[in-house]
Length: 165
Image 1 (tube, one colour):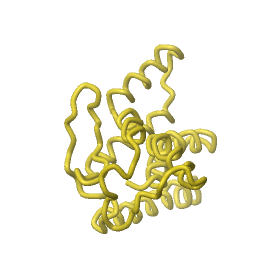
Image 2: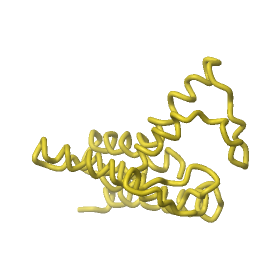
Image 3: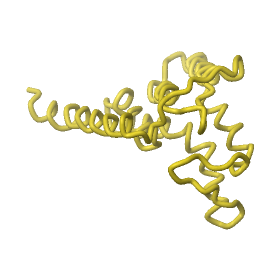
Image 4: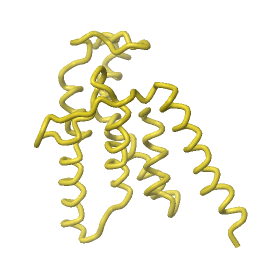
């Protein structure tokens, strides 16, 4: 799924209580993609890395540095998410719900990534099992995702506030 949709889904599910929780959930929703890819894109902007040739097909093998794949494994693992989420709970003795947007990100990526380009290593480091999903850019995923987000955002942030009395 695209990075903005991840932030919007995370905010919708775990950030509706106030603006602060909305933006925290949004950041946790985008973080799993931002953490591995942002350094690479910054290096490309300043000419220290070569553009991998994204188009309608995945780039050739080796065009994306190994550190991106390693960080992707960490940020897209439900195992790592659970350790961090429950570790934070052990420290604070209460759940930090905006962080759960990270878990939603991983769950949404499992069926929306194929083996061809960044399949979701959701059980890493315990297992290397991945699912061959339908790529998020496919119209059968992309357009319903945008439509459902638009409907839900309208309902929660416009309709419900206007007509809730």
